[in-house]
Image (cartoon, rainbow, N blue to C red; front, side):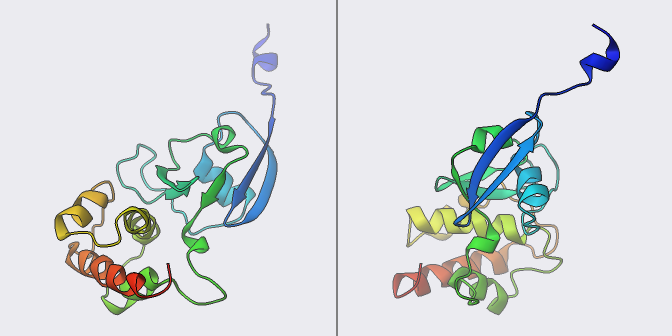
Length: 168
């Protein structure tokens, strides 16, 4: 086989429901889910950071489970439901977790924020009243170089209280 023929890659049709809307595309089998979200769906809230699962900026939910989308292939997400940071707000209103991050200054540069929000959302969907230690453990896979984590932990705790009495 010639080198020219070896470069030809068969594309695969992928259909993923992201934030309630179905996105389809012909993609190379090696395309990462984070690239599908950003390039095919056009949703830029999910950030690409390290490509090694170290930073957590690309965290999303796949079928309700927290996943670092830089290490999942788009073909693995075919037929599944993905929630990104854009899916947290409803009818133009921020989610209580987003509001709590804003009120507590739990972001500075904002690069880690989508992943932090999604990791926190996953935690609160499983544990509506987490301790500070449980919050620290839940966001341990997310690196923030700006805030020092204290405002983030405070925001997640505040959101947990607000979400128990209202919107999830």
